[in-house]
Structure formats: C-alpha cells, structure tokens
Image (cartoon, rainbow, N blue to C red; front, side, top):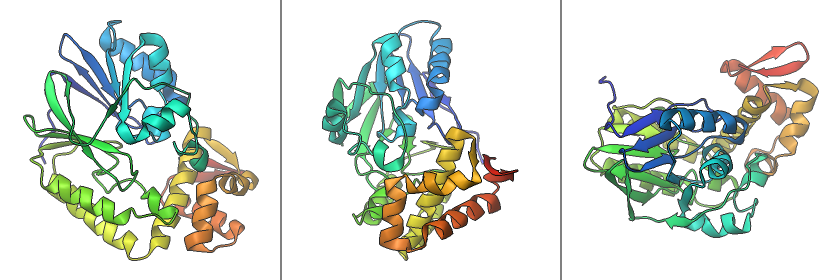
Length: 304
C-alpha cells in the first residue's frame, strides 16, 4: 500500500476517536481549517493551530457536519481568531437558533460550546482551500446534513464520516425510524464515481486503498441494513465508548443511568432492540470489554 501524500498546502491532523481529524490549509496567503474536534480537546485544538500557523491568523473554518466531535473547537477558535465560519447549509438555522435538539447534542448526551456561523456551504458548491478548488458534496447517511469535500485536481477526498478505512459512522437517522441506509449506499456509490487517490476520513488514518475501503463499507452496510437492530446496538456501544473517552472512568453502578440519560439510546432500544435497561447496559459493557475498548478497574469501567 502506498504512503498517502497530500499537496504542500495541506496538513492532516490525526486525532483520537473522541475528536474528529482536522485538515489545516495554508497557501501562504490564506489559511483554513476543516473540522475542530470535541469540546474536551478545545484547548489542545487551539494550541495545535497556533503552533502550526506561528501566530498568523486563521482565516476560515469549515465544518463537514455538526456532530459534536467535529465542531467542539469552533467557539474557542472564533474567540481567538475571529475566524469566518461556514457550516452545511442545512444546519445554518439550527446554529443561529442554537437548537441543541436539531444539532443532536441533546439526543446524544454530548457537549458543544455555542458558536456562530457566517455562511453556508451547499451541495455542488466550490470553495478554495489551500489554493485548490474543492467541491462540496451532500453526504447523508451517517448525518443527513453532512458534506464531503473533493479536490479533483489532486484526487483527494475529505470523506468525514461517510467513509473510513474500516467502514463509516453510525447511521443515526435509522435510530429514529428515518431513512439512512439508502442514503449511505448512495454516498458510497457517489464516492465510487469520483477520481480519488487519497482519502482523509473523519476518524482514523489517511488511506489510499479506496476500493478496499468501499468494499468493506458496502459489506458493513449490507450487514446493518439486513437487521436495523444491529445498527441500533452498534450505536449504543459507540455512544458508551464516546462517554468513556470523555469521562475516562465511570463507576459501574453509574453506567446504566448514564446510558439511560441519553435519549438516542433509550429511543433506539424501545424501537429496535427491546432489552431491559440493565441487560442493555451489561451487553454494551461486555461488547467494549471484548473489543479491548474498555476495562474493569475495581468498581469502575475505564477507557482503554
């Protein structure tokens, strides 16, 4: 497998699974950042950007979508730089009203400092980043309002959570009985139609085996869509892992109440899974332990 190479005006900032990856652009004249991570890491996000820019200004901030792990650093960057910020067009009204239900922060039990948006980025629109032309493409599935960014000249795709090296993000619309599997299939097919040599995913390392990643994603999608309860169970496990990433350590007796406080998990359980709350908690813990994503330390569940 070849080593991914990016244009000189781009810098890939790979982060852990609590914070989405970032992409910093600097063509010597204008600077920009795509996605800013989770709010827990906001100070680190600012420090990384300041170090990279050597105290020069950050001119533009772009979000692929507004899940909390992609926009949690927006507010601190706006406060420091006064940076102009673009969000997906479908999310503009929710940001301006700061509707935490529409923005999904309330439903997922996650946090985000309030930020403002200065404009919208829509499907088919082109934007210049790093002296290169990028086309925004609607990428519903994981999130109905999400965008991906494609640079045809350099054959680079910023795929956000529509395509990872090992799959894609949880199909959240399906958890609430809305269509998401068909949309995820459509965006995978759209990516297949693009000329792409390097993919920068929302989580995990860059990769060049685009065909292999798409094949894995299609197989994963077929597995999940064959039984929506599978997607719901995966979402519960992912949301618990996210909580562990944020809190690092949760008393075992507190895991159930914490899961129960997340509307998305209780709704998904009621709609698709049908487990008693204690049984669902035990299942989610066992799943993380088996995957090596958590461990038991005394009377607490600890991130691993």
